[in-house]
Amino acid sequence: MAAEIRPDPETGDWHIVAPGRAARPSDHAEPADGRCPFCPGNEALTPPEVLRHPAAPQPWRVRVFPNRYAVVGPAAGPAADGGARAATGAHEVVVESPRHDAELRTARPGDVLAVLAAMRDRCRALAAAGPAAIVVFRNHGVAAGTSLRHPHSQIVALDDAPPGLVRRWDNARRHFDGTGRCLHDDLAAAERAAGTRVVHDAGGVLVYQPRAAGVPHETVLLPDDRSPGLAGASDDALAAVAGVLPGVLAGLAAVRDDPAYNLVVHAGPVRDGTARDWYRWHVGLYPRLTRRAGLEIATGLSVNPAAPEQTAPELRRAVLAASTTTGP
Image (cartoon, rainbow, N blue to C red):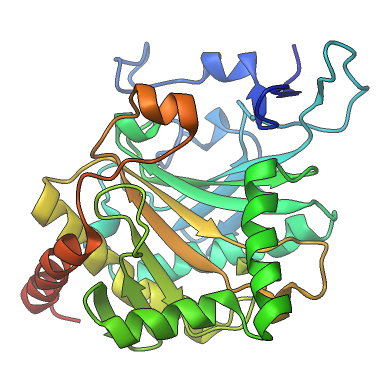
């Protein structure tokens, strides 16, 4: 059965039903043959790669290939049940390192930059097909949804923008229409003025915990870049994020015992040429330190038991300690 988008008639939200995802492998339960499909020497276990860095015959540092267990697929005929329709687009896997035991929080900035550059290249290639949105994300830990330990990220191009993304874009667009300024520029100015929630502010990237953080230690990495998406990100912006991201993750691991987390690259709409005026790409880090309970499920509210004014200084100290320990 192909993946379907099924709108919820009560909330207007979308749910993707993708039965094929249930078959994806997991090394959190012992694999039958003990082989990791992302490790060097096992390339034949994945679909043919669409990007390899560096190019063959050199040993690869980063590989990208279609996800065999994709949440979206090629265009297909419409489904007729209750307004459901095919969930179409593209879904790719970015293997971040040939090392099975590699950790992003201990990676060298050059290695992180290679991963970000590969993501940018694939975002550019996928954007050529004209999707509505491109989502780049990373799951760390079982609670965050990862199935294989080998470090990897994913890229999903969506032919239809889901309501959650549209609401995010509409908020930014309304702010620009009302003020003539980009929402993310104003958020950065407000966080710098307050100071309390700033974790790091140097080298071309602002790291802060937003005032309305939905989960404990929710953290934003906002580079000094005017691109609305990763496809248009500058080399300097990628280098800035690559330089600070390992330290932020190391700090989070120190203060919260290496929690599961989701990392998302937030981006504007692919098809809107005006997005450069009102949206800035940025990285959101969402630790899995709490669970959704009845109120959250019933209302869509997020209940955060930790104030960012308290957690940001804690993370700031841990990031500083991590950078002092590891050096540049």
